[in-house]
Length: 83
Image (cartoon, rainbow, N blue to C red; front, side):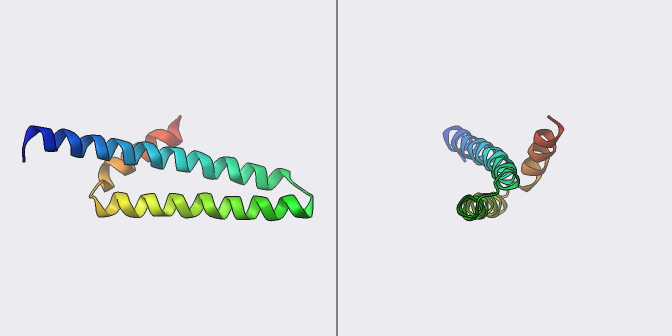
């Protein structure tokens, strides 16, 4: 594999990890919103929003596993949780 391809692969890996961290943060924010709302219309919005954020997070995890990012992903998530 050429140096250029290795760099591209590493950048792709970093981007996926970055997106997973953002998706994880989005899920937490959506959970907080859900916990705060009480009006029936907003509860529906909060539920749909939370499910959408969780779905995106699961999708990104699946992509990371398919690309073999497992170990780095685990380390990155531990880092994100520790912050």
